[in-house]
Length: 244
Ligand SMILES: C[S@@+](CC[C@H](N)C(=O)[O-])C[C@H]1O[C@@H](n2cnc3c(N)ncnc32)[C@H](O)[C@@H]1O
Image (cartoon, rainbow, N blue to C red; front, side, top):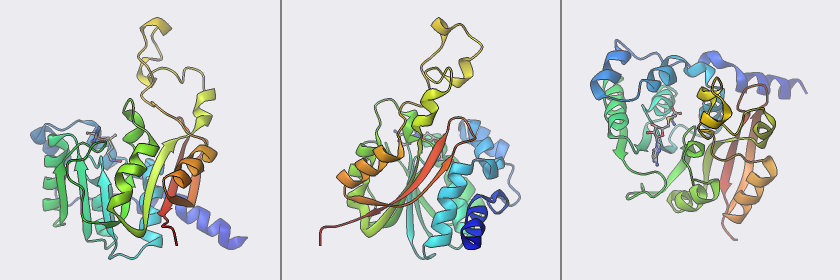
């Protein structure tokens, strides 16, 4: 019981997740790379992006540091850089935005960290890495119209080693009960007719995630839910299973 409580608190404790990049004027670098200003938030406020921190914390706490980690949709590479600080050195990432890729490369160079990052569409990748131990997929997939967890698992299963893990977040179906959830959160001040569709394009229950995982050849190893935030998110660690 005590062990469970300690484990839960450790998992959620935000203050070990800071990203203190040395002598880097991140804001200027983002401008120079012409990357989205949003990446500043992802770096500076990282500890409050709980779904992202828990996903990376699981990797750091439960997998050996010689594991290779590949993050499609890696943006500035903040998650990969955090893992590098935890001793991981086999780090790879892709992003559809060449500006984000440039930013990630420059941040990694300044942090004296080796991250192999290239421009690619994470939904239809041209280049998959050699099999990796972990695919990390956080905070990008459910923003893309037409994307699905099923397609993600099918796409990345072949580049996982046997028993390799996919660590991913999803927007939980609990969000469907929040007033205005069908609309973009930035448009809440507008009349309904003028609002854009929600930026959270799909939501999934735990049962749906478990079913999709099983049908794609994965088993659910770990899960946690953030019920008090909007949108409600859940984080899952799935393990590739192969027929005996
Ligand atoms: C909200 S950011 C999150 C970045 C990173 N995963 C994180 O948690 O800090 C979403 C990222 O997904 C990227 N992205 C959007 N569509 C993509 C696609 N089809 N393939 C790869 N990356 C994509 C964007 O360029 C952006 O950098």
